[in-house]
Image (cartoon, rainbow, N blue to C red; front, top):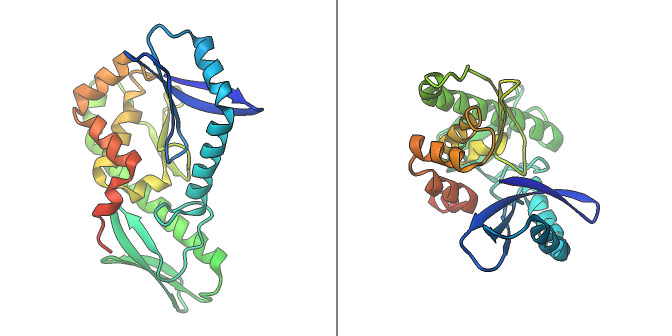
Length: 247
């Protein structure tokens, strides 16, 4: 269940999980997501008081995580990353070495495990960043369109119309669904992750056309369509897949 609380003037979204536990727990994920676990009979005002009492912890850790992602933490293609020659980028969970060369015709292409950037002026870091982000966005879009087309037939039988698929840089979430507008948007950074993770997010967002929130019915639908979705989610958010990539 997703909610929002204002901490010291900052609106912070958080996920609330009701469990059979005695005390409340608070966690700030590496991707900046805030998770609160509470017993089924804990009042909402108690949960909000708990968050307000831990406002400094939440804000400081969330800001730190989001800054790391935005700047590019050595893994993520963060929106402020410089992309220098020799850097490691990830595509589909595989490590690729960035190679920058000088040439008359500018281009970005992947050759095996090398992403080759040809620039008229290799010292122009801003131009290189724009080239790479355009390339990574297009790659992610093609990947997600292929995955969505593969999983779509089951949703089509449920009456879901084919939506518009978009990709943009998002540092605090992997995807979003707008059922009324028939739009699904995926994070460009999702293209770095293994296919199993991309498939999980695709199914997750398409399930929102049937169940618009994270209710028990939503999780039941996820389990019916993708029985191992929890393992995929853990793999995605833990970034354990990074250790699998060969450098």
